[in-house]
Length: 598
Image 1: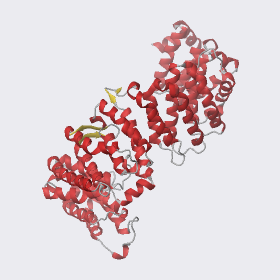
Image 2 (image 1 turned 90 degrees about the vertical axis):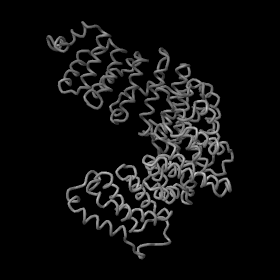
Image 3 (image 1 turned 180 degrees about the horizontal axis):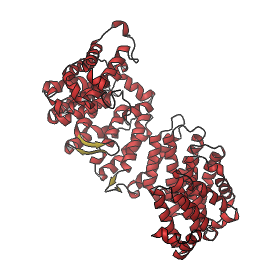
Image 4 (image 1 turned 135 degrees about the vertical axis):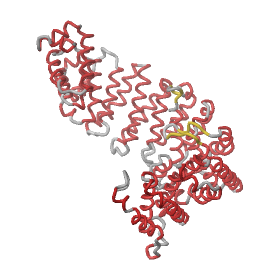
């Protein structure tokens, strides 16, 4: 009720509501607390977490009526947060409290509440550091459920992540009290790194926390997709990297301190824009090294870092070219496919995305390894098609196939037949079994292969049978298939117009076009198909009937339809000349051609 705006009833009765909130934030009842419970929050925890969430909304969205109550609630939330344990049952309450404090600290009007050095020290020492430090439950999650650990740590999509909330709190403090916050944090970083040096095997969590604190205070501007774009002190960052991150990356003992290795890899990924291209190229072998880690989170972090580095751009142009990664191709793809073909692991979308990105950057340099790569991809396709579970993994798998076809066949069109040999069996099986998640991808790759096929080589039985199936009404019932099928039919028309006529498919294609043009959502596909029809088989096109259908819709059309129609008319005039254009229109209605033009 309070999320969008504070209702008038609530605003008129703030005293009553705030009194109740105060009562329950102070409430304790030993009978409702199970001291042996570690994961499930108590009823009191749930109520207090909900109240703090409401306070967060008031402070963030409806500040004016809430201001008189703010000092007292700040104190109560502080006391509540200090009383939470590190047990997972208090995760939700702790994160709600931290988020509330962050929302206050980041606003200049509340600066006076937190500006004392003693207050800042208490926040960092009692809230930030403890909640950034890995707990036993985090370590168990890292090993037992790495997918969930990655979702929380990389994607930040879990509201119960203390570490993510503590990072946000630290950034809010830096925005308001940068110098004081950094000074206090560097003191903690030095202390925690000394703890690690004294006993690395026992105190590695101290170094992990130090790295996370450094990430929080050194970055100035950042985005989720592009990482940190600007830092406060680049020399200090690079010095920290060389002394404390690089040794972890160089360590090839995968069993020792795997969580610290994953954090170090994340550091590289996070600050990738601060490294030169030459420095990143030097780091790639170390990242590849950790693709062989038996820990899912570690090799996933390595794949994420490599993919994001390969995605970097300079002035909208790729930063890394095929020549840059050529020396690493074999070393890179070997562990990537080892991860993918291990069916004991869940389909790892981050690893498959790394494969896709690597193939895209490698471009024509992948040609010598084409057979090995296509074998791995088709083998993977075979087993995921039996039970499609991860749509992101499946998407990157087909993108990898498409990228490989593009890179190889653009340079060697004769390689199309080899791809057809590998891809036709699994693709036909997917179509026969009607695996709905995969059919749009299959049609797109078929279209891609046809587009690269040399003209005059004929279609063959497989493509002919596919064409006949593609022009049946049932094939177009599923909305997700329409863009891919449109591209496939256009490829047939462009590459084999004679075969289209021989198979008596032309009028069926016209029927498909008529179905598409009748639907507002498919009108773009309709005009794309029509353009290929008139350009590929001009002598068979029923021009007058096409104009009649288009003009019938034009009277009740959208601006997009009008633009598409104008573009089609321009293509028609370019193909057949202005005279035929006017003759066909005037045959429908005297003077219609001139009326449309004027």
